[in-house]
Image (cartoon, rainbow, N blue to C red; front, side, top):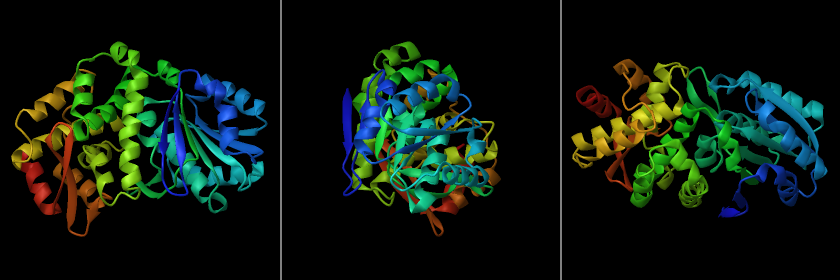
Length: 357
């Protein structure tokens, strides 16, 4: 088993990575919640028939009484209405602050369940059991939980760290190829912003089969990078902002597609390619770098360019949580493996987008 510790004072937790780990979930959760009697499990309509019964059997074997909430699959489930339904369900179940909430699924499930756990009874223990590549390498670690509003994505949320993250790479075997590729956009991002050798490792394995052979190493490397960043900057005011490489423009693409046309991974992939082009225009990024990123993403079938109107860019940039007043911080690269935050007036970024893309 591969183990990483996120050492936040008073909120330490482990990330456990091992094939078949789902069958050990009960004993692992019991170790961090020794007094809990009940566990509310939030999952979605895709994951429930695949993995819920296996998880439930393990949890019940460790003495937990389980309750399940099955939400519709997709970003649309991250809404205040479903959040309220979860709160009421937790109360009907008799959940107490000694009990816990577990998220079994991808990023949508983790975000919604995590925010529900953070806010019910002023906070109950939360367990992340991610089943998609994107959730395993990114959203399950670091404590960002949220729901979407009509004005934009993740605008109502909190920083709320889990008590434990359990990653079973075997759950990735049931992912569609496009969903696996979605997660790989975030994996490629880690190589771009932090580790050039890891980027080269990934580009030498351009197929899902090759990547799957080394999936535990990939999960470990990504989570190790993210935990280091989170331990230094939990609240996203400094170093953690580098994790947003590709996301500022990616959010514009998601918004333009009403969060339905483009997946998060496709939007981030195109956002990284666009940010690299802007970096070249500003003299920060080497001219060959956009092509290297584009090739890495395209090899996995990810979008490298998404058409977006200036109105959509303006709307997304105006709402971006990385903006401060009239300025916004865009994450650029000065080489593969090193991110450079660049603060600029939002109007200047809009002008650059119009000139560059």
